Image (cartoon, rainbow, N blue to C red; front, side, top):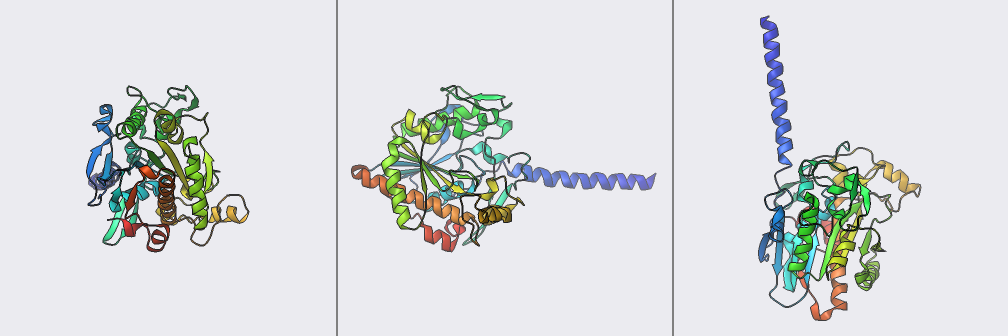
Length: 372
């Protein structure tokens, strides 16, 4: 009996240790990734300042404002609309931590879907965190889910009906921030978050807005700039200039009959000129093999390499695969080039922000080199 007592006690103790370790990992998803804005950040607000209904909820998120004090346009940059699309949130964080406004204003939200950073997508085997090496040490970030945490909006309907169009989508899309626009002040949790972003655009009189995303290598919109028809000329000019830098981006026009997306609803609901950019991320795809932190950082997957060799995906796989630094570099260069094209078309409202690293700098030094 005494032997069984010792065995039971040991198993209970081991179970308690496992529970503590698991609970710490679970709770770590609720600790926001710290962002260290540059000394040129003039003010920090919360998204709930634009729509109080999300105050105190998991939908609230910091908004960083860089005001040069000189007249010019106001630019909005969102990362983390889909938290598992890491290049978007890291690129927006780099802008926040390095920006020096010279003319006009820049507003950055690095973690747009704050709720989605608190969970990972079920049955995908995604890691919860990944680590980048900065000049002063390692820095860990959460790898979130595509949509908001189901704890914050439950249950998913069988069919999601977009407001106000009534367009029917999969019930899972009810937690997708990029299917929620223009939002609804008294709607679902995610509709309220979408409404807050539209209110931000309206109240801050944003002229041009950017939403940074990633997609699976087999998806047709990878390495693309998607624009509302308002931005056709700006996007075409930017794509041409990027070609001169040997960077290929496809130009996609926002479908008028596909509702809820930033590049459609922001442009329809407000005066802003919206753009959405996509990079190619193997961890998003269905052909991937081992799903771990290395795939986030290195983007190197043997199954995608084989598919590329067979000509079955749009990307060309080189030795370096699709690493995070490459994807971040593309986002930052696309952003810089689109802003320059906006300035060319609207010189009376031009905006100038220094300190944002260019493509070659990020590619050569790594994304972590530009994080504090």
